[in-house]
Image 1: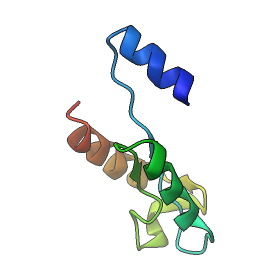
Image 2: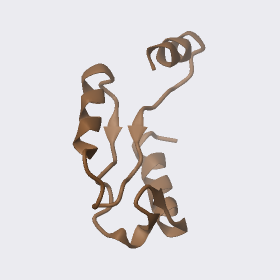
Image 3: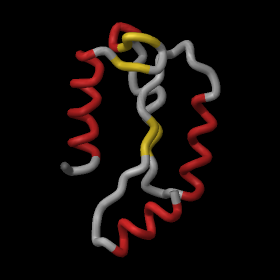
Length: 79
């Protein structure tokens, strides 16, 4: 990831590090917080949804969940 970040800076491009949402049944989503130590702008969205209605399965959002999450990314990253 360091390579990606360095090349983005060199190319004057923006790069955003984040974890997509997981359903509440998933374990060890706290481990993603370790990225925050190396990438200060990293956002952990693993627990973004409390309601499993937004997932097709535990690691994939359904259409409605993806739509809501996309709007959040646009807002958070000023896209």
